[in-house]
Length: 161
Length: 219
Image (cartoon, rainbow over all chains, first blue to last red; front, side, top):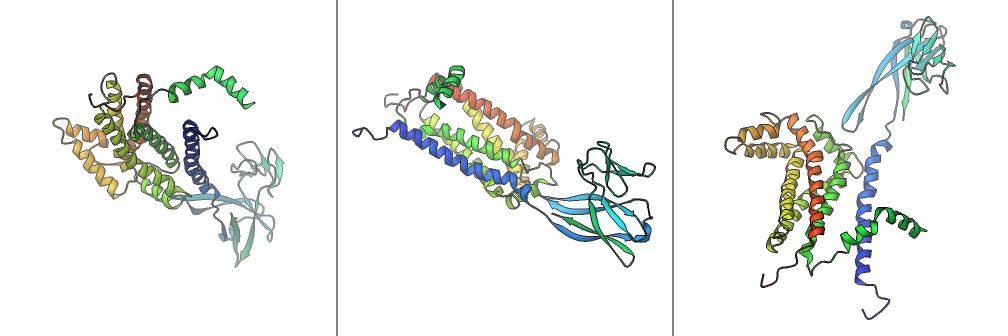
């Protein structure tokens, strides 16, 4: 090596290995991050009215559970999710449709007619008939779906995503 | 600061000693054919990393294996790249490991005191082929299915124990869900574990014994 400032062979190899190694790491590493995250970033939205049957099926004053399922594709599989909604007719003309998903940690609440409460089996949360928190850890009342009555039939506005 | 941190670690872990032993060891004058071993190791690492990522979505059951591979190819960001690297890397690994074996053979590097290194190398070549054989079934498409039908049937031509071997490979008389799951287990757990351990032994021996130079004319 005549020029003292010239890079030595040893240092050149070290540098080349470091650079090539970094490039190879990035070429696999960066796509791999996207690869792992991509299903989590996909949003599927739905906005539809779901028929709950004739309004007269639901007694006034007693919350009644209605179950329905929605299908969507996750990856290579169709996932069937079931949903429960409590139909609570406060009066002849005023109807509440409440999600049965506890606002604490998503367990399903059950209406206990003797206690006049929705009870969550997981952490003893209690909600009143209108879904307001009576006791326990939930941060907010039960979620309400928008609803409408057309030709004596009850519909629920199901929005996701 | 960084230097102080390194020295603190080095004093306890002996990193400098490892570096000197592994990378600063004396080697005879060699040529590019002597890089095939390192190349094999690097490809093994790449196959390992991409393989781990493939298992994030792949499922080894007949009803979903094909769909999950399609999903990797079409549904996931960069799935085509991860699987592509694994797919082509597999073929390249077999070629490179084979060339590495040829180089060792033609340069007579398998002789005393390196016979045992050669033995571990032969097992590594065979397990690499085993990786190719087991991995080929996993996409569960027509080619995979019939290649494995034929491949396991070939084992059946061995005298006396042939039919037994076919059954063991397939997990029964037919190619089935059991075949797929046992090939998967072999592909992602058993064979990689064997290869990783043997690469460790192989490299230990290379470092301990040093590498054989290119044979001289009088050898």
